[in-house]
Length: 198
Image (cartoon, rainbow, N blue to C red; front, side, top):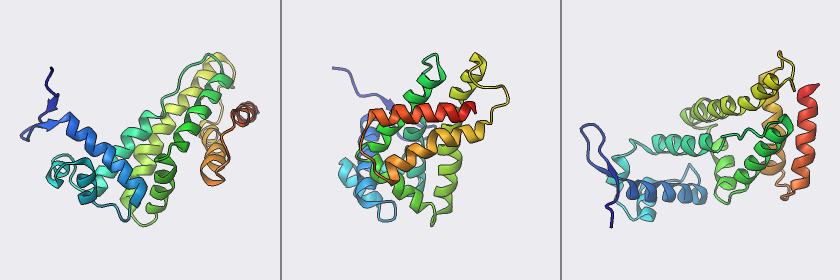
């Protein structure tokens, strides 16, 4: 049987991947249940079956842990496949993002963190710069590919286009809590493509 992999930070203790993953899973479960304001590292450690010291070997604070783990998940979820057409890319993005926003943990965490940003400037800045900024840069690939294929004019407004890709979906899925409806996503993809090309 192979030994669990481990990482030793420069000058630091060995960090076991299995412990890190247990803490990570416990963090998201606790964040969804308690919200950022009531989240405690003690509760995360207890849920993970580890000591609080294991968390502090990886992150210096609750805020640092939140920023790091949320950024990892949110930016990975923004990877966009190249389907070969603008509509295909838009529909793939909308479908994947809709599914991510409906995840039982994400559906509680995302609104809570946006609200927490009003009281925690560092959280707000990280959500804006590290999460939203990275996600927007990745998703901009959809529009750049469309320009290269001639589906959008060379001078298309990328910033407005990115708002059109994300805004209506976030509103309907997270704010209105509209039921899952692939046909609605297909209609939204058609509308977004028409707006981008206008």
